[in-house]
Image (cartoon, rainbow, N blue to C red):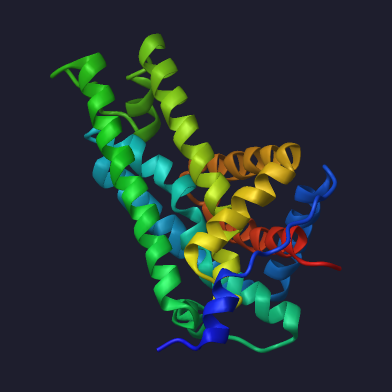
Length: 258
């Protein structure tokens, strides 16, 4: 049974702050310092991201709608995948020692809320896979584009202008919604007994309070992860930990008084 104090803490509104337009670059700089201070643990996560990403894309390359869903998954599920890295940054900020193993089990600090948020992101990913399949079927019918080239060739082979326009419009709308509810939600969930609804609402409020800043932040994330993928996924070894560490500092900057 939860105590009344714990329940109240879970639902207490979290104050959000407005920050300057240059804040995303400050978050990246702080994230880079975290990586330099904890290179083994940070890059270990990066290697996992790169290997899993390469495997998913390779296995789905013969089915364009699955491939597009796998590529999009890096952006939609990124906040959940970075939890261990948030923990590393949290411990460094507090001056506490931690290990890769400790950071990998951070979900135990708030399992119910983190689990529910994970289910939400999984539902979004599955929904996007189905939407992707429907769009490919509507525009290409039974003649799905097939190529013997790499995964980028598979995507480019479907470059029908009308299809690309509709696909990007729907994908962008979905991605914007996911970004708004998750930009700082998971870093918040590892800090205490916060419920997923409060975390998601706080993330949306922070995004709406800083629209230009968060648009820039989203663009930087997309650019870094895209570059990581285009480098045969090797760049993800650095890009994913950098973005995750920086996301922790974004959360702190947007929700805490200095």
